Image (cartoon, rainbow, N blue to C red; front, side, top):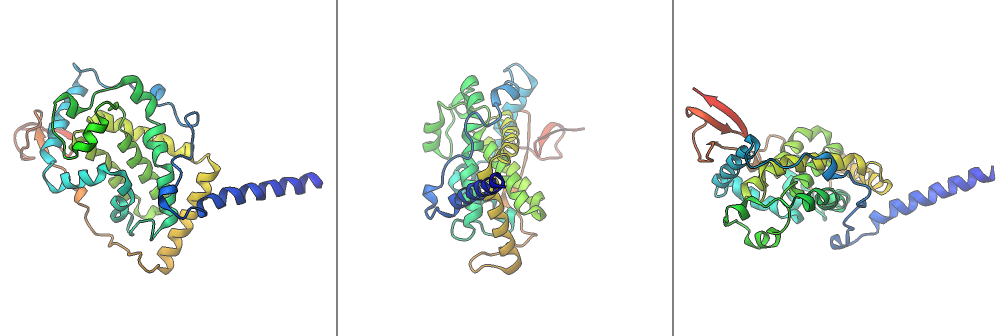
Length: 293
């Protein structure tokens, strides 16, 4: 019996310690960067395929998508891509899809959770493959100007494959969908578009983004094995239940039929030149090859 009480005391103490860590943070700048360690995350170098060879059809598709993205830069979709580039605005960029304004002030538990896990997906889980392949970024290969030159200078020596932003976006979408499953379709679409923004910006090839989404999807189940993450996830779910059932001053619901600017996708030929979606020939329309006769 003594052993049983000792075990219960240990479990209670452990839970209290885990639970208290999230609620003790009062400044968003002091949120820890990682739940996991490098030994915890899935090895991206081992489970991802190598990036496409330059003489392959996949690389030709990468090139076509690069020029498609370039054609979108000075559209509304390009404006969204620039906003997506700054991961400190991550939750603001997911608010419309989620259906509620997400911020440190309005939804601190959700903000804490997503900020704490962000670099598990963007940094830890991608670094082995990035460092091994050291694939050059498209804007470096084409010596192209970007809409965010300060980021371009910082990232020019950082590997392109896989995309850390795409991993962050997809992992975030999966976790937010778990918190608010009624909006899962909108949230996952937003996570997908978050990755496509990197193609539009010229910071990544399409294959970098696809691989990044795979990494983000692989991070989430590992996070679910972490006690602190599970505790913070439950706090986030409880917070959302309070907001959705009773409402909170300052937290506005966003109409379910609202349309995101990020939903716009255009069409181009295989050289990346913009064209009408019904033009004759082999085109790329909404990210897919289409043969119009």
